[in-house]
Length: 119
Image 1 (cartoon, rainbow, N blue to C red):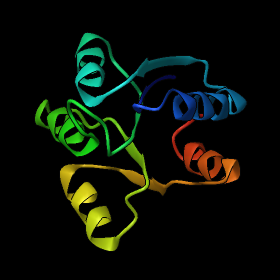
Image 2 (image 1 turned 60 degrees about the horizontal axis):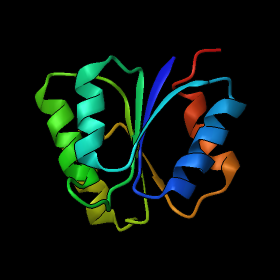
Image 3 (image 1 turned 90 degrees about the vertical axis):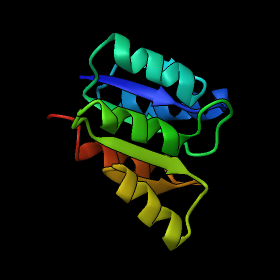
Image 4 (image 1 turned 120 degrees about the horizontal axis):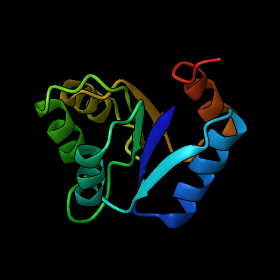
C-alpha cells in the first residue's frame, strides 16, 4: 500500500507516518503543501491520501478538489483542526472520504487507517 501524506507541519507528518508504520504501511510519500502534493499525486499512483486543510500555496480543500477532477476515486482522509459541521460538509462535498479533527489520539488515527489498510 502506498500513501501520500500532505501537511505543512513536518512534526504532524512524522506523527502520521509513525501511525502508518505502526499498522504496517511503510511506502509513504510526504508533501509540505497541496501544490507539492498534487505534483506527487500526478507522478505516481497512491492507495490512500492523507491531507491537512490549512496549508500555504494550495490548501487541502483545493488539493482534494484537484484530485477529484482527475477522476480518481482514491480514498482521501482530511486531518485538520477544522472541525465545524459546515467545514466537514464542505470537505465531503469536495470529495473527502474520511475526516479526523486535530488534535487526535493515536488510537483514533489507527482506527481510521484500519478501514483502508489491508490486513
